[in-house]
Length: 99
Image (cartoon, rainbow, N blue to C red; front, side, top):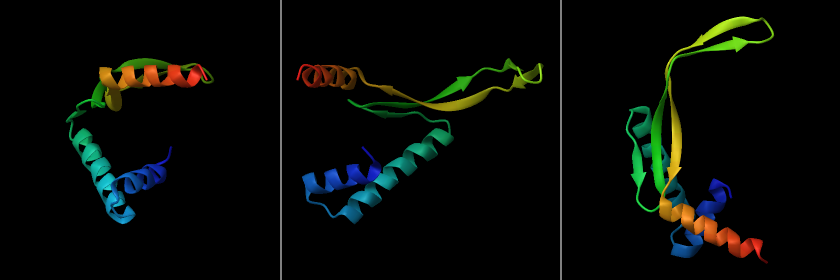
């Protein structure tokens, strides 16, 4: 499902204009991105957590040149789904798999 399909679905279910839904969805993503860039985690109860994970400094190998590369410590975005969300996906997929 794409972002455009999500916007259409929300608009259909709520009766809100697509333009307003699009602005809201874009604003949500902008807030999540800016919060994570600032080092803050975003928690959405019942859905999951958008967390910033720290990767430690490490040495990697460039196989083609046979050299060592130092990868400095850095931060990466990550998503951890809530337990209730995971459970719903598991039970929902069982119903589809049995058909």
